[in-house]
Image 1 (cartoon, one colour):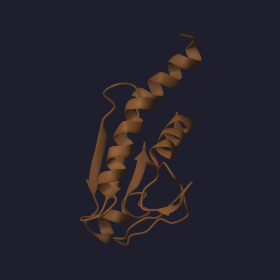
Image 2 (cartoon, one colour):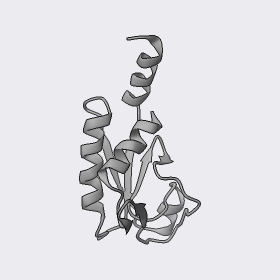
Image 3 (cartoon, one colour):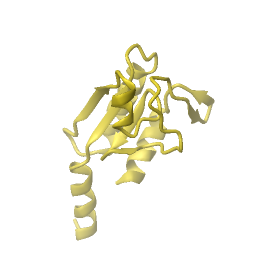
Image 4 (cartoon, helix red, strand yellow):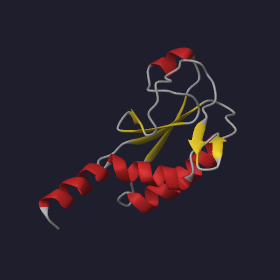
Length: 116
């Protein structure tokens, strides 16, 4: 493995992946499942995924929260928008099939691959 590939693999290995969601978010479960599958495919084995409950406007304001669910990699929104919020609200994603409450697994895989 050349130095460039080694550095990319090391960066991915050290990545911190976190899903932010509000209580009773109807899309959190499906998003977490898609995220877990995408991480298994695109990241080194044993890459942990942290799930964080956003339960107040103060908590939301302390993260790059753009609605539930939000996926962060190293603290950066995997699907960046100008839409940070401290509201405990759902998030909408633009998918190939139209607007949806969570990104597709392929979108997550592509975003993770582009991140590293």
